[in-house]
Picture (cartoon, rainbow, N blue to C red):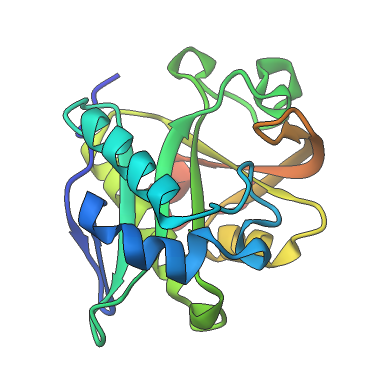
Amino acid sequence: MRHKGTQTIETERLVLRRLLPEDAEQMYRNWASDPCVTRWLRWQPHQNVAETRALLAAWAELYPNPDYYQWCLVEKSSGSVFGSIGLFDDAATDGCRPNQWKAPGLAHSEGAWMPGYCIGAAWWGKGYTTEALKAVVDYWFSGTDSSWLACCHAVENPASGHVMRHAGFCFDHAGIDHKFDGTPVDCLFYCLTRAQWAAGAAVF
């Protein structure tokens, strides 16, 4: 599959760019240390800014890879770095196994590439996550030859499902995802095909 890596994306209100080690202070303060933000994510809140800085240093080593996708969200009006969004191949996730999907014709040989996102609580309810997700979806389908994207959210986090649907994803099935510590989470899985994206995400 052809990839294009993490390049800068600009929307009406946001700049999506690579995270840098110097973003550690804002990342820690604005979202990575907040248990309300990380409640439904796979990872636990960061304990200190040094943990955040170490993570960003590790990510910096991955950015040269054409199949690595990880952006921060920068609010144009304030310059604040307030969230992140990435794309990952989650084909090994229980809910992403080929026999789980009901949508016809998905190319499972490509893997199950899935967006993941989080933003600081102070920026909730402004439509920023939907704006960022739509931009990343457009970036993916316009820059790669992938035929589909997957997406999932915890059943107990319906707000994330609203974001996915507003970005064109269609519900496919219920399944299980896991936190990094192995804790199982009941989730709802969605997909968006290239044909749906091109046609304005028509429902199956």
